[in-house]
Image (cartoon, one colour):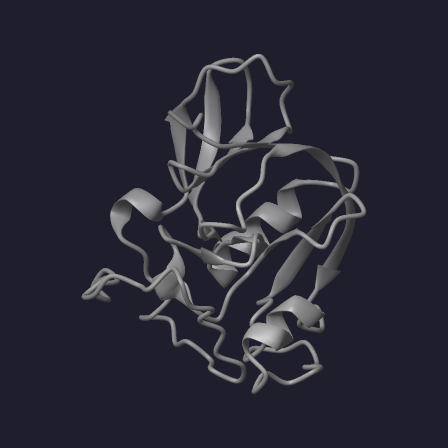
Length: 183
């Protein structure tokens, strides 16, 4: 049995950690037990099929009924790239291409301007596009980022989990992104 993914060092949330071309193996995609998909007790007034993202908790919930949900571990936007709101999935894509936005290229000029979809692509195996924004729920070739706030605002899942979610939700799915209130 593969060893659970160890998180040996804290990730530096001030840095973009994109690794174009890196392809994780099955052992590297093994998450700590709390981040693995699992049905959980979750009270919600949202209708079944809604996705609720709790950024502070680092979990995405796919609502099953008014008291249960399927929970997935996620990576979220780092400080300065966090957001909340209500959107709908406007489009779905298998093995999406990656075009880093100009702001990301300005921070990381060494990044490729385009990368075709595939196993080494930072967008991962699937992408769920959120409204007309540049944000997505997508896979990642960096499983070690699950549970951390390191992205440029997108919601990341390991590839097996994003494939599972992709297969469960249609275009038009309601997505609620919640952050903890600032104190």
